Structure formats: structure tokens, C-alpha cells
Length: 299
Image 1 (cartoon, rainbow, N blue to C red):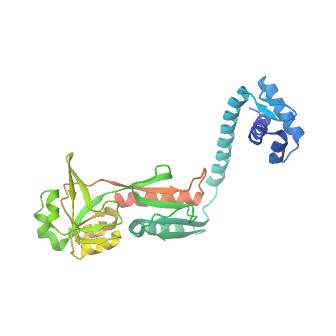
Image 2 (image 1 turned 90 degrees about the horizontal axis):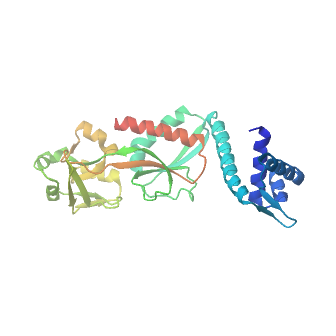
Image 3 (image 1 turned 120 degrees about the vertical axis):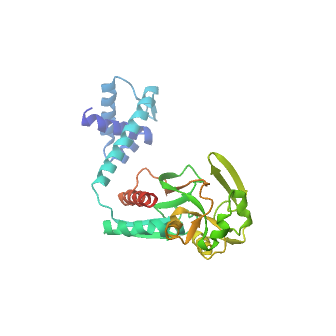
């Protein structure tokens, strides 16, 4: 297709979308005569009537409707291609505003932010660490990190990685933990609940495809993961915590796994974006780096 033909597609789509040759000419910044002439030439090339012109209005034909859908799609893809090409040769710059849950933010995202700003010195980061789910549009947030399971699947999202949930205790409780053989036996030990979770007192354990659901009665209820971790460290009871929040404690032996042969459901980590056809290179570059950092963590 010749370059002139591409321009004629733009003229035709503009007439259909604005409803008149005059409005299309105003949108394109050219004269009505040029628009009319170029659409007529397009019809001549196709040997098909696309628009029926009257003194009062422009009406699209059935063939025109079919052709319009294809033309609109072609022009959208062309626009996206130019935008992505321009972004590909640009360097990340400006301020990136994001939000992330406190525990995952401290453990993984803050180190990624430090690496990102060193890698791209023209970028600044404004991060809100909060266990509350913020409205990303109302708060002008470019990316929100969500840990767990997406409640709204209509959101534009990209998967960052996964995490394991671990039932753990302080090493000071070793003798009590060693006596446990089945998940239902954990109800005999004090349990610390994380009320930031949707269901902090009911857990499903799995061993060789055998599943067992256990409901606990917490002795302490806290609304933040890091607060729960601290209470467990102090020997106040057992609890379920994400692996990214306790990896160093498990490695040092400060915390010990409880019933390690039994597993809990795997959680997911997502980057969520406001609805948009195109994301700035600073956002895409940061997410790529965060995925890399998360893979290093879980390796």
C-alpha cells in the first residue's frame, strides 16, 4: 500500500468518527475539499461506495462499516507501533509513583527502588508503603504492587512472581513443634493471626494431594505482617507468614518451620496499572527490574 493510501484511510476514518467531512477536516487541520477528494479517490481505488453523501448528512454503507472496522484497527496498531518505538529509544526519566504492601515493600521493592534509581539517575521514585488497597486512579499512582490474589480480574496487571506461605515458630518453641504430626494438632499451640488477611483463622494444608482444613483460635490478632513476625520471633505463638518476610529468620534459625512436609496455598504477586493503552518506559523498566529481583529472592 502506498503512503498516500494510508493517509486516505485516516481521512475516511475521521469522516466516519466525526459524522461529516467538515468536522473531519477540522480534526485533521486540512480543508474539507481535500478530505472529500481523498475519500473519493479511496472509493475509486476500491471500486466500492463507502459513504453516501447528501446535503444534510453522511451515511456509511454496509461495505463502509466493514472497511471502517479494519481501518480503525490498522491505525490503532500503527499509532501503538510508533509510540512503542519512540519509548524503546528513550531513557526512563521523571518521577515514578507507586504503592506496595508494607512487608513486601520492605523486603523486595525498596531494594529494587534503590537499584532502579542508581541504574536510571534521571528517575525519581515516590512510593507509598501501605497495607490498605489504594485507589490508583484517585491517587495518581502509576503502578500498584498487589500481594495475594487479585480480587478484580478486570484490572490491567502483570504477574511479578509467587510466594510461599510458611507456618513458623520461634526456635524457643522447638520442643512443642517437634511433637506436632498433623495440622489439626496446631490448635493446641497459641496462634497469632494477621487480620490484614481476608481469612486469618482458617488454613488449608496439603500433603501428597491430601487436604486438611484447620480453623484456629488466635491468642493475639495483629493487622500487619511485620508485627505478626515480631510476635512470633518473641515466642508468643505460631503463625503463617510469607516466605519473603522470613527468609533471613529461617536461614539464621531464629524461626523454624512447623509441619514443613505440609504445604499451604501459593500466593501471587502482581503489578497493577490504571487503564491505559500505553505505559511509560519508566514503569516498564521498573517492573522488569522488580521481576528480576523477585526471581533472585525466590531462587
